[in-house]
Length: 363
Image (cartoon, rainbow, N blue to C red):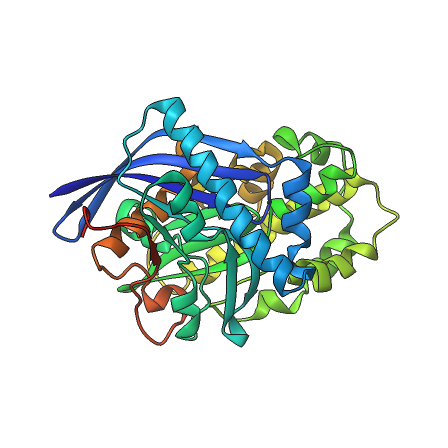
């Protein structure tokens, strides 16, 4: 039995900030347990938010500079975090920030150079968790299913309401996972039309009325009829979904928001029904991610489904993804499979993650 002190780091597609979670991961003959200790979200300033949102349009040099500078930036945040909470960490596991995700073309790229990060924080760093799976023709997303399997297997399904809503659940002997639909990435964009970062407690949505024409168009998007495994990216939002939304440009932000939360609720319900039909089990659903705090969104999700939705304590809601990448970092160090092929549709399982820095004390 060995316990690792790990800083898990997650930057999601909603781009509200970087989550740092100090976790203790205990490894016992292939079984893992956890505690989440100190944690904090560092919000992006407008410079970083703009740079990350526009980086996919940059040339090769601009992309490379951002990769390195962002690695340095995270390295300094780690130092700030460690000093503030007096943390003695063994390693860092960082997801990075996704810029390109085209698994059908065998491409996925996250900025946040691990070598730069390690050089600044003087800790061994595990990065680049998605590339190996995509190289094996998997979706490379969502990757949280390994944490769902190790830590939350008592639930029938685990639902994450982040930038995208994704789900994992066990069918027979195998756990599967996929992205369901856009969530906070869409809601936050509407909120910014009203100079708000997000829809606090669903207040904007509560003032709106569902537009059923827009709702029908959204629900008819081709992606929703595709079989899993499948995943979404920001370009899909811009090129496909947002074109449909523009047809409703005369709608108020409040009406758009109310329509979107109902759309999300419908798609989550359909996914749960689809998965439940493939297994003889109940629908006990663990809900995490920022959307779990949106009471109007949760009301619409519950309205469309008979499942039992369980929202845990705020720390787990906010930092579950950072926790899972901490786990994946430990499993990489221990040379254990941390992506199972049924999660993503890959040809085989993966021991995924790039090592940066000195791991001699851990190996």
